[in-house]
Length: 115
Length: 112
Image 1 (tube, rainbow over the protein chains, first blue to last red):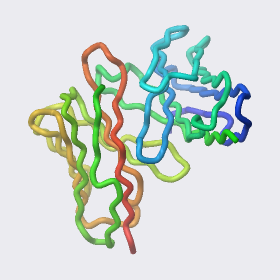
Image 2 (image 1 turned 180 degrees about the vertical axis):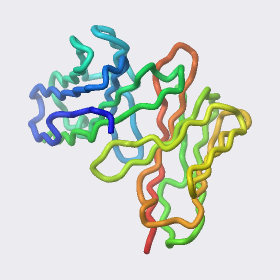
Image 3 (image 1 turned 45 degrees about the horizontal axis):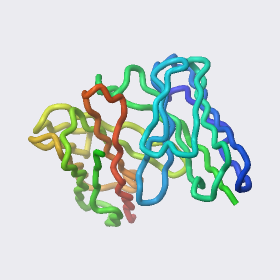
């Protein structure tokens, strides 16, 4: 299994509080991705990174920010959590990105509940 | 925006039966990947198809990429309870966009 660790695995917090989720990889892969998974929507991309300090928005980036200061860590921050951000969040990594048809390897997810 | 629609959304069949799930789009993809996800875990890659009309087999699973590279299908022969899970297709492009577009998913339940 690819070495991807997401933390925390579960979190319950209140509306309006900041939340940071962490993704740590030991594979030295260049690309890292944050997705959210909701019933009926499959996986939707929030943000992704193609290198240290290089990030770009996905299709559902509003209300989220990311940072990547080291190859191995990709942080997702909800500046002021809202109930609509209750979801399961997945981190994924890829060696060279989709243009070379490389697969993405996923962590086991973080279940986030915003009350 | 590229969209991938999967059908059916839910499928429940008896062990030993055959089934096919579909992944359709109006957009062309340079590659199509299929993932399986089990409860409490992240998706795991099953296969990647890259050529229009390509067929790949993985034991009892047969994957096909449409000739126009807009659709794909997954056929399972003699389903087993271990096939239960969420099946996701994902399309990639070579337009300088390093993102996958994921389908809406098919939740498959195999009844013993």
